[in-house]
Every structure is written in structure tokens, then in C-alpha cells.
Length: 381
Ligand code: ADP
Ligand code: MG
Image 1 (cartoon, helix red, strand yellow):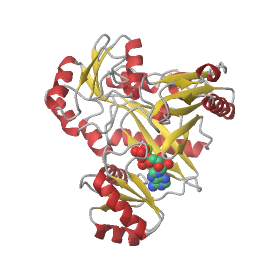
Image 2 (cartoon, rainbow, N blue to C red; image 1 turned 120 degrees about the horizontal axis):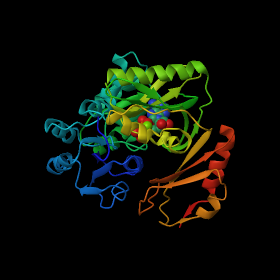
Image 3 (spheres, helix red, strand yellow; image 1 turned 45 degrees about the vertical axis):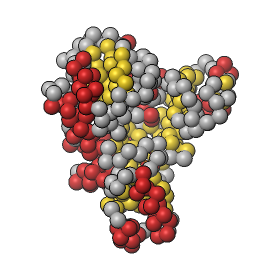
């Protein structure tokens, strides 16, 4: 068991690491992070930051030396770096194996399929010839994606025709630097649902209430909890999360992003081997947040209650590329049920996740209304 004031190492210095660090420090732990960006969102809160790229094995091992245990908050961290830490005798949770599978869309889909978990039809793409075959085998509409490195909708293009598929191939082939692409059948979902689950080394796994997610331009816009779904769907998602937790032997918190179909069946979109945007609501509306639960899981502490204390809605606050000063904070906070979270990023580039708002209320509909109303009052200038 790793007890406070042990030092925890976080690969990645973004907002997920920042919120994790806040919770870890509340519980008396110390945190060091590694990120190439100076004064990163996590580095601002942590006890220290090593400023280095993720593939700098020497720097990564320097971080590991300081820490009792390590984790990552960003799934595009180099697997070789995580393996190097493991070889040095330190534990990284989740393991390099989990990272390797979940950071590669093809390996991930193959893994899910092998464990009888439904995924959309897909095809491995290496050449233009594969594009021709996939067009015939899978058809349209579809989505062409890079196998790794993508996030917030980066590295994917929706394709409606063979010609569009060929054009998308040319674009994505450049981004992916010769790595494989994956062709996915477009899923005509009625809802997107996210379930967060934490598993500790003893094999205990606990899920959080399911979030109903809406994306705008492939970036999470709104999460509301409890999701408006039936008991059967809820059971199925819980079952899927447990199968994934067990079969990957995940230690830590992860998220399963899913599509709900008209007939009530569920298809897994992807697994994030880390805390997730759609679990930010847990900070303000659950007894234990996803960040605290991750800490408990990796430190071998007993897991906390994930009980939902109130219906809640979370809306992402994105940069607009217009200015870096946030106006309207006072107006947004006129609603006493609204909470503001800002990640400490200096430049509000268009579509960059700068923060989020949560609102709690007696009903989930009212929570959404309150969160969106507050969100409309905020502007970058
Ligand atoms: P990211 O790593 O950027 O989160 P995702 O694969 O989750 O990538 O895609 C982002 C969003 O794009 C999804 O949440 C969903 O709204 C949409 N999307 C992606 N793939 C598909 C698909 N095969 N069918 C329907 N929508 C999709
Ligand atoms: Mg996603």
C-alpha cells in the first residue's frame, strides 16, 4: 500500500493530471509530473515538473527514481518510456500493456472483438488498395482514422464515397507518418454513453454513474448524469466495463466510450486508459471523484463510494482563438449551483479545452439548463 506523503509521478501535465494532483494533494500525497510544456496545468499544482518530451527515457527514469508509483494522464505517452520505468523496477499503473493496446485503435478493436465485446465493423488500412477493398467490404458512411496519436477528433475524417476515402487516405497517411490507418463503419447511434470504472490490484472494480455525452465537432461538449437510459442498458455497460477491467487487468481508472443503438444494444467506441472528460462531473456530484478513485486504485487503498449526490451536467469550455482573457465569470457564477473549473492554460487556442462548468439541480434537465446558461455568459477576448 502506498500511503501519504509518498510521491506519485504523473506522465503528462495536462488538466487531467492537474485535477488528479489536486485530489492527491488533498489526501497528503506529493506529486511530480513530466511534460514538455513549461508551467503545465499539472506542473502549476504539483511539487515539481520535469520539463522533457515523453520519449526522453533518461528524463522519464529521473522522474521514476523520485516516485513511489507512476501513472499517466495522456494515452499518447510513449510505450517505450513506460516499459523503461517498469524495467527499472518501478510500477506504472495502468501497465504498459494496457497503454499499448488502448493507444492503438486497431489493437484495441481486435482486443475487444476477441473478448466478445461489440465494436463497429473495421478494416486495417495500409495502402490505397486496402481503401478499395474496405469500400467494398464495409461501405459508407464510414470514418477513416489514424490508429494512434488522435484525440478530440483529430486524425479522423468522415467518408461518404470512394473518392472521399481516397482523399482522406492521402491526408491521414501524412499525419500518421506511415503508420496504419483504420476504417470504421459509421455508427448511427441514438446516444453516446461513457462509463468510468476503477479497479485496484486486488481485483475490486467499481463503476461510476453513466454519463450521457454530446459532442460538438467530435469534442465532448456536454455530459449529463444520470444518463436517460433503461436499467438493461445500464447493466450492459457495467458488464462491459468489468469485462474490460478484468481482461486487461487494469489497475487505475479508465473510461469506456460507447454508442447506444436504436434497438438498445451497445457498441464500444474506444477505451481511455485514464480519467476522462465525461467523468469531471464526479468532482462536484459524487462522494468520490474519478481522480480520487484513481489514486486509491493505484495506491492499493480501498475504493470509495461512487454514489451520485445530485443530478448534474458538465459543459466543456473551449478556447476560441480570439483572446486569452475569460470574460463573464461573474455573470456565469450568478447561478449559485454552478461551479467553474479552469485548467491554467495561457493561450485559448480555438477548440482547446480550457476548463469546464458543472451545475447540479433537482433534475438532470434543469442541471443542463443551468450549465448551458452559465456557459453562454463566458467569452474569450
Ligand atoms: P477521440 O480519440 O478524438 O475521442 P473518437 O474515436 O472517440 O476519437 O471520436 C470522437 C467522436 O467522433 C466520437 O465521440 C463520436 O461522436 C464521433 N465518432 C467517431 N467514430 C465514430 C463512428 N465510427 N461512428 C459514429 N460516430 C463516430
Ligand atoms: Mg473518444
